[in-house]
Image 1: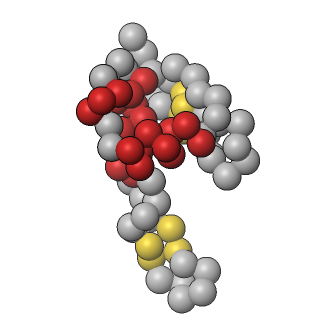
Image 2: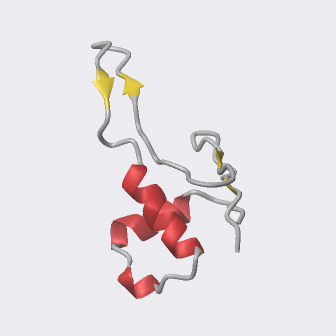
Length: 78
């Protein structure tokens, strides 16, 4: 199985495209108000939970919050 892209019908969710080989999840966004680098609350862990779910993880192992976020994402592709 090859994971090539995760996307959603929601405009706030940017499509994530995976390249051949090793891929890294890295969050680095500047806060528009303070112009400081923000590395927290960007969805890195939620993305990892989503990938785990897409690769057939049991739903009962997910937290209620993560499941709710995934349900709100809309369409997704593997």
